[in-house]
Amino acid sequence: MRYQHFLGVELVGIGLGLGLILGIASESDALPPITTQPLENAIAPLPISHSATDLIPPSPHLLTSELPPEQLDLDPEIIEDSPVLQRWLEEVPDVQSDIRHDPSFRTRIRLGYSQFPSTDQAAGITIGIEDVFVGQTGLTVSADYQAAFDADREAYGADLRYYILPLGSYVNVAPVVGYRSVEGEDYNTNGMNIGVRLMLALSRTGAADISLTQSWVAPGSNEEVGITTLSMGYAITSHLRVAADLQKQNAPEEKDSRVAIVLEWML
Image 1 (cartoon, rainbow, N blue to C red):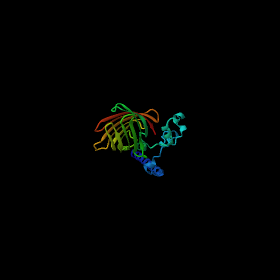
Image 2 (image 1 turned 135 degrees about the horizontal axis):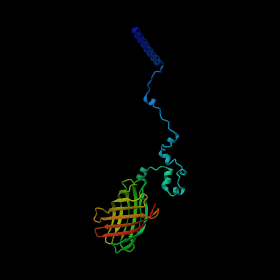
Image 3 (image 1 turned 135 degrees about the vertical axis):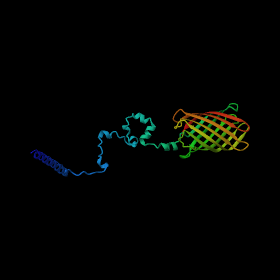
């Protein structure tokens, strides 16, 4: 009896186990097949809310040329008084082109008083025009005339200057070639004028600059005259400047000097 009871329990356990295995197999047949897909297709892009799109910065041109002035939230008087702002509203400037082609100094018409300390403090006049640009190049034309009212001091000439560096630079160098006539109490020299000019533009608008020019008239001859000129200018209005000239002339016969206070009209 004991063995029959034990055998019956085992048969019941085996039956339950077979039933459980058959049930799991039938359920697995009913499940859909598992498929794979590329990773980029499996990850759906997250939706961006309307408020999040407001955080994306607009393209640069929307901040300048396509932005109406009324949307700048600025006083109209500020826009009217700012040529730079008006220019940026009309069109975004090419800064690199400006540096290369837009001169940091301007053409100037000069008229002033000269004094000649080495010639008994004689008084005189100086007139001229500086740096007339030939197109959008570094080539300029300059001419001047200086004379004492009642003494043998006179000088005049015209020069070509070619500025080597971009015209918008704060520092520039130009070789000088031209003609000049120089007259003193004991000499009279004229001929080719060759030299070099250093320009320091303290403001890109021509408001202030310093220039130093060294040249030689009739170089290599017995009458060669060396001329050193230091000029400083400062604007008092948008077109008017006050300038000072300090000049030394070294001739074989004597050494002369000139100082001048000049009004310059910027074109």
